Amino acid sequence: MTTRIEHDLLGERTLPADAWYGIQTQRALENFRITGIPISHFPELVQALAMVKSAAASANQAVGALEPHKAAAIQDACQEIIAGALHDQFVVDLIQGGAGTSTNMNANEVIANLALAKLGHPKGAYQHLHPNDDVNRSQSTNDAYPTAACLSMQFAAEPLITAISDLGDALQEKAVAFADVVKMGRTQLQDAVPMTLGQEFEAFAVNLGEDIERLREAQRLLCEINLGGTAIGTGLNAPARYQALAVEHLAQLSARPLVPASHLIEATSDMGAFVFLSGMLKRFAIKLGKLCNDLRLLSSGPRTGFGEITLPPVQPGSSIMPGKINPVIPEAVNQTVYQVIASDLAVTMAAEAGQLQLNAMEPMIIYNLLNAMRMLGEACHMLRTRCIVGIEANREACAQHVERSIGVVTSLVPHIGYANATRIARQALHSGATVRELVIAEGLLEPQRLDALLRPNAMLAPIQEDQPCNDC
Image 1 (cartoon, one colour):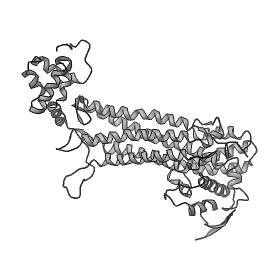
Image 2 (cartoon, helix red, strand yellow):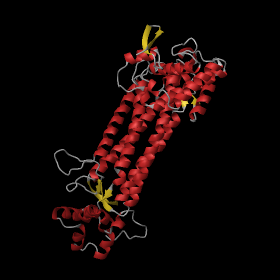
Image 3 (cartoon, one colour):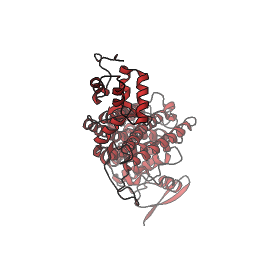
Image 4 (cartoon, one colour):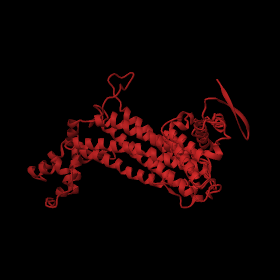
C-alpha cells in the first residue's frame, strides 16, 4: 500500500496515499473506537457539513477573506460531496471527544484535498489550500458542527414525517374497512362498552398523526443557527459581514428557512432545540409502542386470546411448536421504541452536562437523534408494509364478544337506573345469562324497546336529543 506523511502539532502520521482525509482524521480513527458507526452512516450529516463549508466559502469570498480560486475549488468540492461523492471518506466514529472537532476536521480535510485535486495539486499539499486556514476560515467547530447538526436533523425529519403520514393513511384505510365491525371496547383490560373496530383504528391514525406537527415545530426551532459565532459566540476571527452572508448562502443552498441566532453566546452552549426534538421523538415512540401493544393484544390467540384481528403471517413463530405464528413485526417496533426512549435519556443527560460556553457532549446528542429518527422511520415503514396493510378483522369473534359481554348494560343505565343495571350485570356475570334475558325476565323494559337500545349501532355514539332517556 502506498502512503503519504502529514504533520501536525503533535508530530507526523503515515496515511494511505488514496485517503482523502488527513492527519487529524487519522488521529481520531486511532483514538475513538466506540460505536463502529462512522459519520458516513448518516448521509444527511455529511451533506450538511459540506453545505456549511460551501456557504462559508461563499461568504468569505464576498468579504474578501478568501481568494476567488480557492473559494471556487472549495465550493466545487462541496457540491460533489453534497451529490454523494466521497462519503466513504467521512470515517470518524460518531461518538468522540472534543465537542465534534474530529468530525469538523474530517470534513475540512476531505474538502481541502478534493479542492486541491481540482486545482491540480496532490493530496496533502496544504500550502496551496489549507483545511484550517481556507476550508475552516471564519469558523470554529463550535459553530460549524452544531449548524450542520441542526441542518442534518431537518433533513432526517422529512423521511420520518413521510413514514408517519403513510402509516397513518394505512391505519385510516383499515378504519374505513372495519367501520361496520362492532366489538367491545375495554378499559383496564375489562369489558367497557361497544365500539367499532373502525373507530379503534381511526383513533390509532389520529393519535399518530398529531405528532407530525410536533416534528414540524422541532424543525422550525432547528432553523435558528449559531454559524458565525466561532469559538464561544463572540465571532472572533470572523469578518463583520460574514455571519449574515454565511447564513443567507446556507439557507439558499439547503432550501431551509435558516436564521441567525439572536444571541450567539447563548446559542453556542444551548441544547434546547435538540432536547425538544428528542422529547418529540420519545412522545411519538411511546404512541407507536402503545399501538403495537394493542395490536398484539387484539390479535392474541388465535383461539385462547382476544382474537379480534389477524395479523399477516410473515414468518414461522417457533422452532418447536408447529403452526405457531408470532406478532414479530409489532415486537420489533416495540424494541425500537425502547431504544428511542433510552436515547432520549442519553440526550437529556448530555444536554445537562454542558459547561460554561460549550457543551462537549454534542456528538452523542447528534448520534442519538439521527439514529432515533432513522429507526423510527424504518419501524413505521416496516409496520405499515409488513403488518397494517394485511390485518384482517375476525368478525365472528368480535360479534361473540359483544353478545357475551355484560358491558352492554351500560347503555341501559339511563332507562333502568344505575342500581338495576348493577344488579343485572352481577347476575349476568354469575349465571351466564345474557343481559337481555335478565332484563326481560324482570320486566324492566319491553322486549321491543330493549332490542332497540341493545342494537349495536345505538351504543356507538351519544344519545340523540330526541331519544327518550327517562324510561326508568
